[in-house]
Length: 171
Image (cartoon, rainbow, N blue to C red):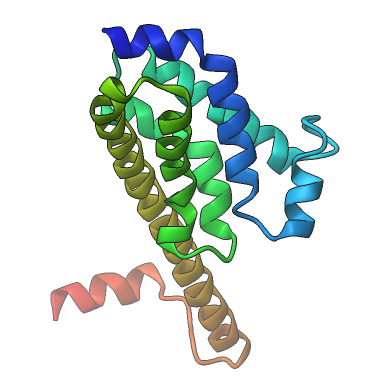
């Protein structure tokens, strides 16, 4: 209970520092661009990153489940899943919260806060793996479509009539 009160008091500082730490996981040139403007049209990745950090932080101030936490993390994880991040790099931004917590919170709250951050990291990893799975399925489906179209153009695939289908069932 005391942890949530402290987090509420220092919410603005946490979100600001967490956003900056998340942006800093990109290359220096990208981080400079992403950290400038939070306008969704001029800087969609920066805006989504900022909004997600804020949404997740607000969410942990309430009673939450891993499922709802994953949904809150989805926008930023979805972006990082399609970028050239490994799984560990994609969720590393969550662990920046531990460092920020060490700076902003009383030492007595450190252990409880670390457990909270670990839960966020696990939810991030789950969401990342689901996104990567979706990407893999999309790529596999597209490959099957391309191969099927190539076979059709080459005349190697023919549509079966109802009679052919019914006849093959009787055999």
